Image (cartoon, rainbow, N blue to C red; front, side, top):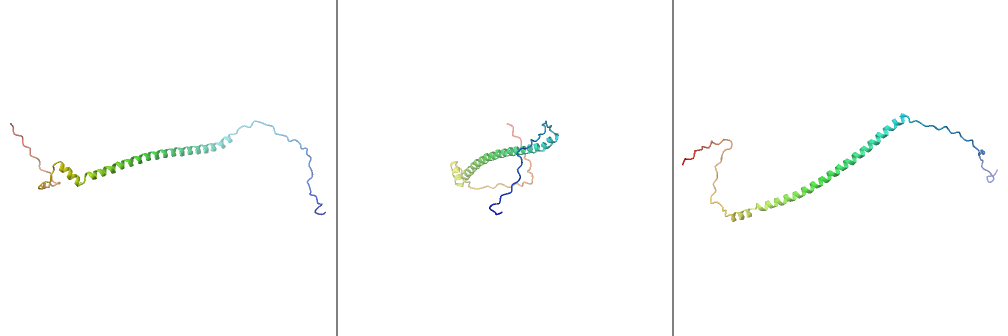
Length: 138
C-alpha cells in the first residue's frame, strides 16, 4: 500500500445500546459523632481568628484615641510654652536696671550716703535668750 491509499485503523464499534445500571437504595444517613469531633477544631480555629481580629480592631481604636489625646496635650503644651516665653520676656523687661532706677526716682528713693554692714551671726551657735522686762505701770 502506498501512503496515499492507506486508511487509518479504527477500533471496533460497540453497540450503542447500554444496559441500565442499577442504582443503590437511598436511605437516611445518620450523623456520626466523628463528624462533630472533626468540626470542633475548625470552630475553635475560626473563633480564635475572629477574636484576634476583634482584639486588633479594639487595640487600634484605643491607639487612635491615645493619639488624639496626645495631640490635644501637645497643643495645650505649645500654648503654655508661648505664655511662658511671653512671661519670661516681660520679667526680663521689668528687671532692667534702667527701668528700676526710673521707678525708684518716681517713688523719691535715693541712694544712701553711707552703707552700714550688719554684723555676722554664727549659724552653728544658738543665740542667747532674749531678756524681757515688764512695762512700767502708769
